[in-house]
Length: 257
Image (cartoon, rainbow, N blue to C red; front, side):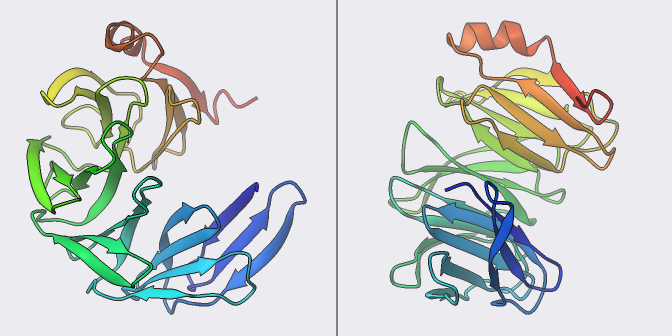
């Protein structure tokens, strides 16, 4: 369905039905702010400053069928793998965990980052491939085989990594950053070659989302704007290299319709 999950600073999680414009659920499973959310069909996973991850079935009014408690600091990233049914979680304690939520147990702890891990993305081409990006004291992207827990490769970006998005159409990915590298950077995988770097925001990029068609991303910044970037146009990497040089497709709120 068309549901929106909202995590609040008081630990409450709200579920909204966007078509009916009504709130259908209100969960109080956390004691501190909820800053990480992840959907897996009818399951909503929430991560909080209370260090817990709670998995809830939104079909039930009162549901927290799994609580994951291995992290020691605020959970700042959650990402489900729809193929393997694994959940990846990133934390301010610099760790990444891969979970089997059915057993409430971690499969692997991935511990190579030296800063908080907010950016995580599963490859659409290799279902056991996870990319994770570290904060300003780390500045690296690590690539993991989550069937074994092995680190396959690492990329030093020279900047805080806030988001990672894989292309659905080519073996490329985009990372978003602060100033020093370029705020939106396109890379080729597995060579880890930088294809292009773009800037546009007045401040660093904190938030991002990939469009449903997999061709564009939207980025958000403390400069109070959203920017749209067509980074993965259909037609292969050559087309992507040409079009990404054109930069930002739109800027909001200045160009808000």
